[in-house]
Structures are given as structure tokens and as C-alpha cells.
Amino acid sequence: MTKLYFVRHGKTEWNLQGRYQGANGDSSLLPESYEQIHQLAAYLHPVHFAHCYVSPLPRAQTTAKVLLADLGQSMPVTTTVGMREFNLGKMEGMRFAEVAKRYPRELHAFRSAPADYDPTAIAGESFPELIARMQPVVTQAVAADRTGQANLLFVSHGAALVALIQSLLGTPIADMRKDGGLTNSSVTILAADSPQPPYRLIKWNDTEFLTKRPDPTDTI
Image (cartoon, rainbow, N blue to C red; front, side, top):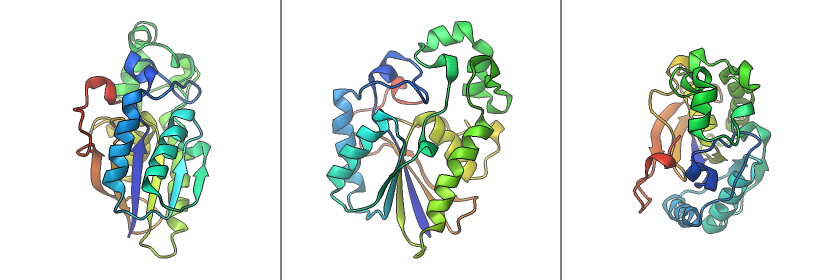
């Protein structure tokens, strides 16, 4: 059994401000986020990881750098665009309230009705497109585990990870928001008995190690 650990990056300035970052936008981690990443590392410290896969976006890169330094383990690290956040097109950089006024249909579908989400008006990425670029990163990583017992680490983004993880569990696109979102500096753990999904859920959006109680701006 290969175990997969999916980490959402630490909270950023735009997360706090209620702005969409997406695949092209980015902002710095908040000072408090470093402490939360340290807490995550302490929680994961007993686990020996064979490989880490990281989004190229700075907020994920910084999260991975701090996390791996704390873990103190020697492992290959692969930066891959497959782990990048959703391309949200024209919504990127906009505040949630502004998006709700300008693109109400797209926002509602993206957040609450994924099967109805059509990103044409915002020049964004669809759920099938996202899954098509993210899933191979994971399935190929599992296939590369010749022992069948490795622990693999993935550092990515909230909206993208929700879609990816639910797809790996065999969840239809229409139901991808059924378990809610993912919190900054959280970890979600899956088990894979073979490279091809569906996989099994062990823990969803685990934040038990964080001393600060999450607020609504921590989860997407």
C-alpha cells in the first residue's frame, strides 16, 4: 500500500484578503503560516517520505521548503506544473465579492455545482482539464513505487487538491464539494493499492496539529 500525503500551502496575504490567486496569481505567506508549517512538520515527522512533488507557484514552493527543512529527510523533490492551482483566468487577483458581482454563475458553479462549471467567460480551466493534468502526476508516482509501501508527499493548492483528491477517490465531478474544502497547512491522506484509482481515504483535511483554530478565510 502506497500512502499519499496531500498538503495545502500555508495561508497567504491574498487568502486573508479574500482574493483568488489561481495558477498565475500569487502572494506571500503570512508570518503565522510559518509556525503552522512547523506544526505540520512536527506532526509528519515520524513518517519517512520517499519523494516530494511540488507546485511551481511560490506559495507552494515556500511551504515545501520550510516543511522539508523541518522534516530533515533526504528525498527527491520534483517541481511539476501538474500540481499547480486551477487556472481561474479573469477571476485571479479579484476579491471574492467582486467575482460574485461580475461572474455570479461561474462562481456559484465553481464553488457549489462543479458539474455545471463552464469557465469560458473567464478564460479559465475546467474540472476535466485540471484532473487530466493532475492525476498523471499521482498515478505515475504510485507506479514508480516498486516497494508498494512508500509514503509520497504532494504540496499544492486548495481548489486544485479538492478536485484531484476527489477524482482519485472516484467521486463524480458533480459531487466534488461534498466534503467541503481544504484548510491552509492541512494534510489529506489517501492509500493506493495499485496505480490506478480509485484510492482509499484515510484522513480528509486534517488540522488537528494546528494550535490556532481555523477561521473561514483558511479554507477553500
